Amino acid sequence: MNSSCSVNIIDGKAAAARVLNDVRDAVSALKDYGLHPALAVVLVGHDPASQVYVRNKVLRAKETSIRSVEHKLAAETTESDLLGLIADLNADPTINGILVQLPLPTHINENRVLQAIAPLKDVDGFHSENVGGLSQGREVLTPCTPNGCMHLLQDTLGDLSGKHAVVVGRSNIVGKPMAALLLKANCTVTVVHSRSVNAGELCRQADIVVVAVGRPRMLDASWLKPGCVVIDVGINRIEEDGRTRLVGDVDFDSALRVVSAITPVPGGVGPMTIALLMKNTVTATRLQHPALTIHSTPAEATCLSIS
Ligand code: NAD
Image (cartoon, rainbow, N blue to C red; front, side):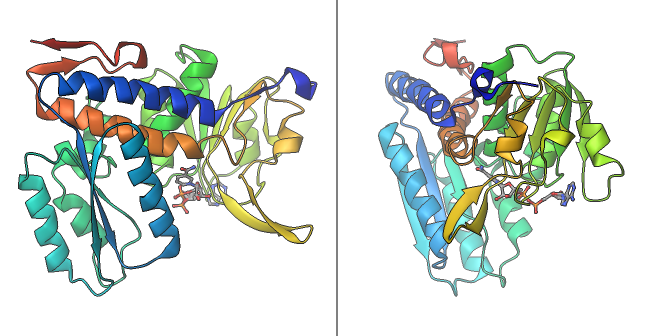
C-alpha cells in the first residue's frame, strides 16, 4: 500500500507545455528553411462541444506559431462538397495538416471522409495507411491521445521495454493504437475489452494500466497491482453532491492507495491530446519534405539537417 504523499500525480498540463515548447522551437527552425507549418481545421455544423475543441486547437496553433486555417461549414453541407474541400486541401502545398472535427453530421460517411485525407496530412492518424503503418512499426502519423499517453509514460518510467501493459478499451482512436504504440515500445501488451473474462485479474498483473472505456470510476484499487502506473484516458461528466464534475474511468482516491503514479482527470491526458496534434503538424511537415530531417524526439526537436 502506498501513502498517497509518495504517489506521483502525473502533471499533464506541465508535460503538454513541454511538448508545446518543443513544437514552437521546431516551427521556428523550420521557418529558417522557408517552411511554415499550417493546419487546416474543418468543422461541419454547430455542435457546441466540437466548437470548443476547434477553438482550443486554433488557440494552441497560434501559441506555437503554427498557421491555422479554419473551414466552418454549414450542418447541411453534402458529403461530396466536404470531399471536394478535402481534395483541395490535399492538393494545397501550403497546408501540412488536415483535421476534420468529429463527429460529422449523420448524413456524411465519416470513414469515407477520413480515408479521403492524404495520409501525409492526416494529423489525427486515422487513415488506414497510417493505422497499418503503425502496426508495422513504421514512422507514420499516429493518433494524438495514445501518443500523448506514451509521452506521459516515458516521462514517468523512461524505457518501457519488458513492462507488462494492460490497455482497457479497444476503440480505433484510443485503445487499439495505444496497444500498438506500447508494443512498438517493447512492452508485453494485453488488451481488455467489454467481452473480456476476468478483466480485474488481467489488470492486476500489469505494471502499466491505460484505461479508455468511458465509464466513471470503473477501476478501483482492487484492479491494480501495487506500484503500477495508471494512465486514465476517460472523461466522464457526472452529477455529484449537487454539482457537475469531470471524473475518469479510474476511482482516483481508491487507486492512490496502491499506484506509484497516476494521471488525474482533468489535468492528465486531456492537455496532451492537443499538444500532440501540434507536434503531428510539425511531423507532417517534415514527412512531406523528406530531404529535410527534423529529429523527432523532444530533446532533438529543434535539430534540423538537410540530408
Ligand atoms: P469508445 O466508446 O469508442 O470505446 C470504449 C471501449 O471500452 C470499447 O472498446 C469497449 O470494448 C470497452 N469497454 C466497454 N465496457 C467495458 C468493460 N466493462 N470492461 C472493459 N472494457 C469495456 O470510447 P473511446 O473513444 O475510446 O473513449 C473512451 C474514453 O476516453 C471516453 O471517456 C472518452 O471521453 C475518453 N477520451 C478522452 C480523450 C482525451 O483527450 N483525454 C480522447 C479520446 C477519448
